[in-house]
Image (cartoon, rainbow, N blue to C red; front, side):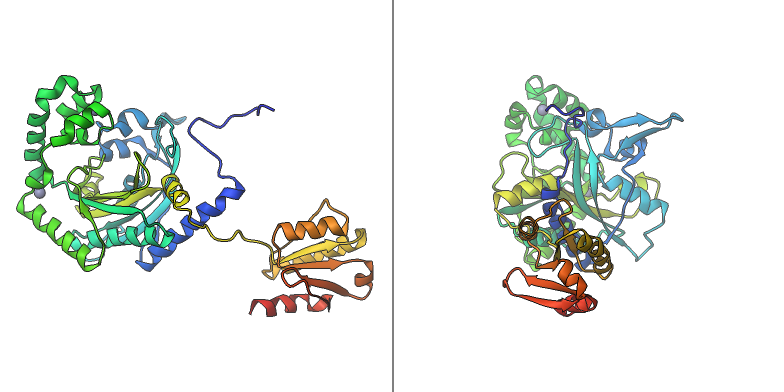
Length: 422
Ligand SMILES: [Zn+2]
Ligand SMILES: [Zn+2]
């Protein structure tokens, strides 16, 4: 049967048998964030389009091609958020969440939207998790943010990933680097892809990000940003590396990391999956010292990272990591006869109100079919209620793992489960 309605291209349903995996990642991320004392913020999925245009920079692919932009009925121009940092910083500014000596540590999760060409692990509605630390440019913070990412990946069970770090300098020193890049690329100009020809004039750092094979080849011997850092940026970079060593987080230096977005400065880093080929960045992050001021706030420095759920799921599957047990009901009721069912559903409601998870098979009537359903959903106990039991105010409780069974009074059933819990 062809379905009447199709999913929008580049989107997908997270079906019940998959959602355990998502829950696993969400729970783990939340736990680790709390352990590092980062707390959750939730922002709307759409914002004024201008917020992204101003922060991300209008030469980026996101702004030029990939943003879902729309006019509402009053003609206001909004965009579905293509990333999480700008909305978070917008909220931090609007709600005055940072004070001198009182930085803020937050994390977020949720769907993001980019009108990109869908491919494996890449969707138009995709899901990200991320953290932001706003209000300090102490290099320790850079290391702490990285440490949180590392702890998260480790505790998910991932082994085959590496941390790559770089410094992309600040507005004071990246000018010289850009000049050097322009000089380097100029002789190859005609061989670059169309996008890169434009980038060469507007934002030459973006050339390092290009995925086109020819451009990649040309970029092989580009000058290194690390040779152009001024004293301030070099000292910062060196102490980030020192802190990472203190925190026992192995890293390699990759001067090619530039990050696609305009607002980054100094520290840039990526956790890269070494199993997956292209599209292998699990987490990408860096400093964005100018962003607060750019969005109308005080000039507080910030740093953060973001990662995609979809990419992470691929890595977890490749490394065959268990997502834990599916939740199963404590009690599964088996009703023999209409009268038993009628009384039984009251009992079920009572148990559920007491925090005991239970279920039954509404459309199955024979004992055999109902017991089978109890096994299938991996319930711990089957509770069997027929006319006889009802008459005596009793119920048969069968421990499905042990196979043993006993009769208990209907009045004692909640007690019975409470004792099992403790
Ligand atoms: Zn600098
Ligand atoms: Zn290119």
